[in-house]
Image (cartoon, rainbow, N blue to C red):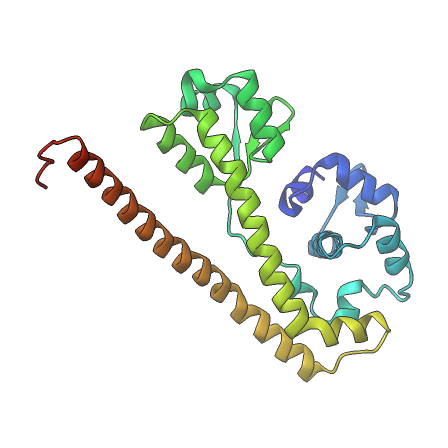
Length: 249
């Protein structure tokens, strides 16, 4: 159960809640061992995708129960693996308290731990911590090692998260309006999708993944260029205003 929850990006408590609400099918049992498989993971990703679209758990439960013969919501949409598959490529990192201290030294304070948990960078799993992303952990560690206080890193991370959510909302709005609107409307009405249409939408979504990431990378890179040039120009003007001769590079 813990492995399934980790793969789905949810807590074991949430997984138990979904199971109690019959949102996921029961596991296959061999004695006292419960086995979950890719079908359970796909169902959890479907639930996550529906929640992201604004559905309530009650509505999701009704939608799931409406399908007989073991059919899943993804089968109705015909797009489950493409639409709700994770776009991120992040690898979670398990850390003991000692290992966390190795990364951030004296910056591991109750206030910073609370902020990390609130933002979602850290989760507690028994006696260990789970960091959501190896890349973000490495970046935070490097920033702290170069003199940036962890509190400042977390404050910046909170703002970055808000801006990233806003960008994701923009991309999702464009995709929903111009790519999936007709499909979602027909699927909600119970109309089946032709295999050729499923293939077309699948290919489109797969193409949009790297495109959206490329747009963000390009815009951020150009924005950093603009800000660095503006900052250097500001330094130069301050130097001229103070009567200094500046410096040669």
